[in-house]
Image 1 (cartoon, rainbow, N blue to C red):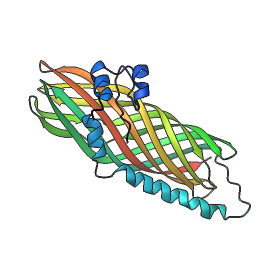
Image 2 (cartoon, rainbow, N blue to C red):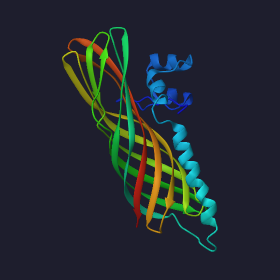
Image 3 (cartoon, rainbow, N blue to C red):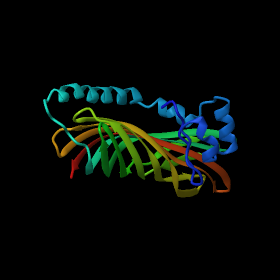
Image 4 (tube, one colour):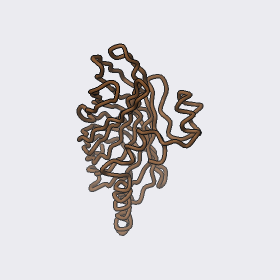
Length: 255
């Protein structure tokens, strides 16, 4: 979570300073990053009730099973092939709403549900793959903005295509992932409403355990840039920057 994810309907979000020029961050955001200032979306995500350390502990626990699995003499498990599954877990979407010189961060914790499918190739212990997923992120968040009054925001769904790379330890596969996500976002404020689909980066990490040759369990954490745009609502100029992170527990079947 040390890296910042920003997204735009015109440009992908940024996860590290070296990507700023390539992904076309707005000048204001570039100046804030260059000065080392923490953007509210990042701060609020870091203050979530469940934190990235939880993810680390889960991944460490799953990886620790590798030693036990290696004890199965002569077993040579292969991760190559296709798979499909379902996942569920906690999700938090944070939206910074700015208008009239005032800013308000609006967030909501919710339950997320999703489907995923992909294919792996294995080269010795290195596993690379591609995966597509779609998820419902949760309901409407509400807050009060200093100049707009009551504000409602929502990112209901997201879909992504990403690559994965991992290191196999018998039946345990820790991995990193990165790709592109398309997410919807809606805002209601000042008597107006605006909604759009934004394109952003999605970065993640996880660990997968093959309970049997066909049935796999996994814990998957992802950070997604949802939206960075401006709208006119009831005559007022309103900017919104939104991001989502979630920890999903998944069950899949390998073909």
